[in-house]
Amino acid sequence: MALTFLFAPWSHGVGFGYIGRSLTIATELRAAGHRCVFSCDTAEGIVARSGFPVVGSPVPHNQAVPDMGHRQGQYISIDTLDTAFAIAGYYHESRVREDLRADLATLRACAPDAVVIDMQPTAALAARHLNIPVVSVGDSDFFRPTANGWMPWLPDEEMVSPYPSCLPAFNAVAAELDVPAVENVTELLLGDLTLVASVPELEANQEPLPPRQNLRYIGPVFWDPPWSDVEQTLARHGDERPRIYVTLGHGGKATGQQLQPILDVCASLDCTAFVSLGFRPENSTLTLPDNVVTGGFTGISKPIQWSDLVINHGGYSTVLTSLRYGKPQIVLPFMSEQEANGALFVEAHNAGFLLRHTSRARDGRQHFTYRLRYSGESASGDCGTDEWRQAVQDVLADSSYTQGAERISKVIRAVTDQRDLPRTITEFLA
Amino acid sequence: MSDESPSSDKVFELIRNVLVNVKSASAPVLPEQILADSTFEEPPLSMDSLDFAQFVVGVESEFGMIAYDSDFFNLRTVQDAVDLVRRTLSADSAGQGHFG
Image 1: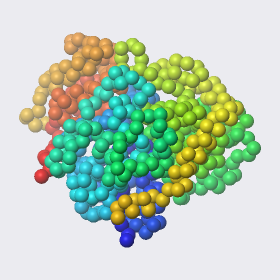
Image 2: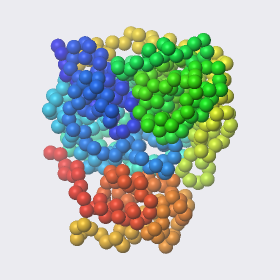
Image 3: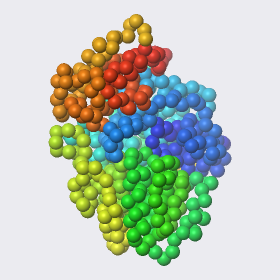
Image 4: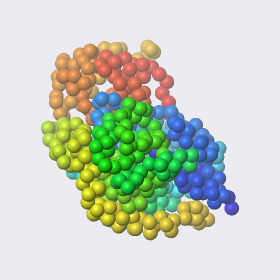
């Protein structure tokens, strides 16, 4: 029987991983004969371009990470899921209520057989109120109620979120809908079926996820735009020299400025490189060397497979997909959980390293200082060409990084090669 | 601007109190040091991103408002904040009223 699924990924501004992951699952469900619609789209209209109807009227509001310009600095500090929700304004009951109203209207109009969320709390609350099953997809840290869970390398007492907790607001509004209260906002994301985009071995060095019936590890889920011609581009680019793939994501600040020193290093090394520029307009000012080719929004899996080394920002999907294909990584994080991804998934398995680490400054103020891998303490955290050159040379010269990545790749593929998401989801709903 | 909106002087006074509280843990400032044309990024305020986030939350709490407006994050001076708060208070609030 064909089912209708409403996909409700996090849509509060930054990062593409949530919508990308939803697009992949929706595409597989559609191929299996089911109907999939979305509650939101990207500014570029990628959901609609992929052939999925976008229903409902998302409430316009500020981005998940407000544009604080120079005040933001180049590192975005988000210590927990609660803080991520707070930045979206969910510590205000009225704000939760506003988005919930929109989600309820969408669900009533769409009448889906299940709602598929990806870090989207109000759609989950709306679905529970209407007794519609919730399938929740997410990064493993979405579901871990650990204090400081997105910045676990910092002692808990060193972090003070500037925002109030969102828990009282969520519970107050949930009570109005006769939806049970939760003890931690991470519980809002636990679905009737919870699909964690990881594998148990990658989580073994972290606090266990809460025991939950119907919580399954599905490995990384990534999305490649079907209209991308990157495969042909890559086929024309590259020779016997080492191949470097550079992708710094869409959510961070100052990612554009960090690209140029990487390109300068590529120019000085005997290598070829491919750079995904994504949506960022500032990249038009980059100076490209002859051995570097760029693409726009290319998707990640093809360039990763093409490469010998992936330079990335530590985005969850990018890190895990690079591991999936057994590629070593150099991670330059621009925000909290990206640094955690680099430490816990890459460094912990000797599949590469973080180029900079963050710690709290010791001057009594709550801001961060940086430690670069080679040049040490840095107030700005900027990585120059010397830093990048050393990092690239070290990874390319040391095969143990590739071996570490290949070892984890086998573990991940043991999960993803067996994966049948439409079957997993529809059998659960039956 | 409705008649019920607080005066500019009153809003300034309350915003100044919020700023004193925000700065108290790191680099304390006295109320009289904060002027309408004080900028957020220069002394005596010298606010970083965390200070500013705390300031926005403090203003929301003090005035019972929501700082949705992205303009809030592009303020330059204390007077800019006073003006924005007064504008926001005079606008219709959204999302009020319980379910059921």
